[in-house]
Length: 425
Image 1 (cartoon, rainbow, N blue to C red):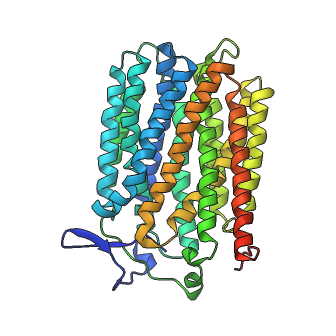
Image 2 (tube, rainbow, N blue to C red; image 1 turned 120 degrees about the horizontal axis):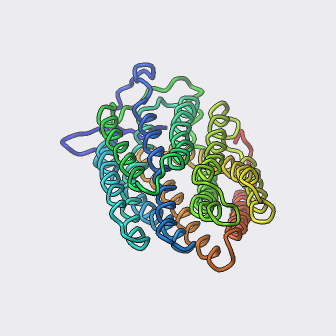
């Protein structure tokens, strides 16, 4: 169930031959991982909005604003494809600390950019550094979690709440601390936060050799999700949904600051941060709900319903929303949907065969990054050509296409197997 490795002769190898049973209660909860997840995304969310404020202050057009978000996501996605496997080999702690230290250095360098085009050249490196962090941290979390869906659901819930709380607070921090006469302030503070994360990670147990947890009961043995006949289908459908959700998130993050600060809405930096706060707040709320129950697992309807609701929210934002409150509600709807797709994607990725856990979490994060990349590029281009509201129609279109693709994959699998899916299968 977990991603388990041991180290022999200086090389990390799978602990599949003679695992040493360790009672689940003897392994403490990975609080260091939870704390690091919160601090990393607190810094990242603050930095993302601060980058938009910085670029707007430099006179960047919407296309460039979208490219800034997209280029960072592109560097992240490209690194994640390889970083999961690298973390499996060199150790999760080593990969994560190298990544966050490198990111902190790059964040400081953003303050030296003379114009938005320098930012475009630099952000892929910041994204690539973070690509070393998240697949490693997620595989590290699996290593430190007892086998069984209940234990995994509990720790995944705490992990998701931790990082989403950081994303929730980060835009507010950016809105409150931004100063036109001291534009380097948020970048310096974020880099300092990265330094704290390095210390926390170094003090956190594990991250090199894994710990194989003892099964808690025969019922847990029966719950090995990667032995479920439909497990690969659910994982891929959740990946598709996660792509569309982060396409929407990137659009909100990169496009709304320009609209909010424009003459049409004339919002303050602080209020722009609060509106984006609504997206991350709803996402964290979805994580809280997912943590309290396992009934959403191996069911297709939560994904489809969440995506359909997100389409409604994006269409309303494009056509009807005309105030900070209206946009906040629309973004909250989209954020709640993103919470459902993300927790599904991570759950199915992290609970499969242990020997490829890092690789799967790498793909999970890479697909997320590709969604952000596409969201930034497409939304920036659409906004430049047709106006600052039309990107939300582009989001609704992408989500609708994903829903259709999911339905096609689902029905094709049912026809191929000659049966319909049953939760008890």
